[in-house]
Length: 93
Image 1 (cartoon, one colour):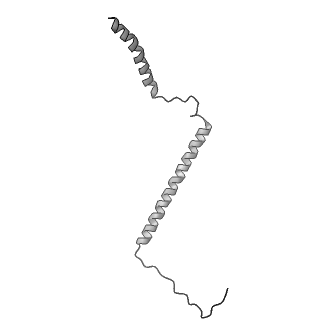
Image 2: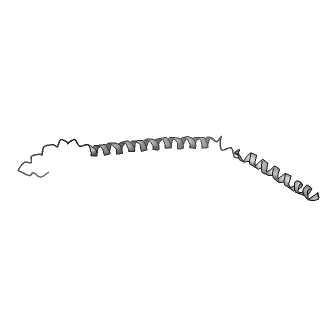
Image 3: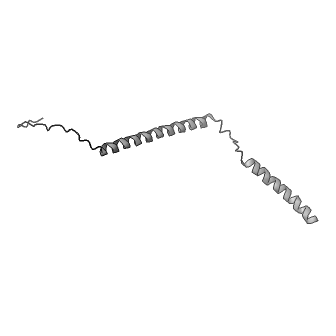
């Protein structure tokens, strides 16, 4: 009987501690107050704008690659300029 009481005496605080840690683990604490920091907010905005610009550049690169690939596959003949007639005399420049 004494063994069960000692087991309960030591087991209950451990179980309470584990339950407390499990309940508070999901919530994120911000002890330094960084979430409301103006500097952090400016950095987030800057990173977002950089990401948008990179996405635009990638889309422009895809478009350019597509246009160049289609141009190489185009079977229509190109009109070539007539050859330039050179005079018989060479003049120094």
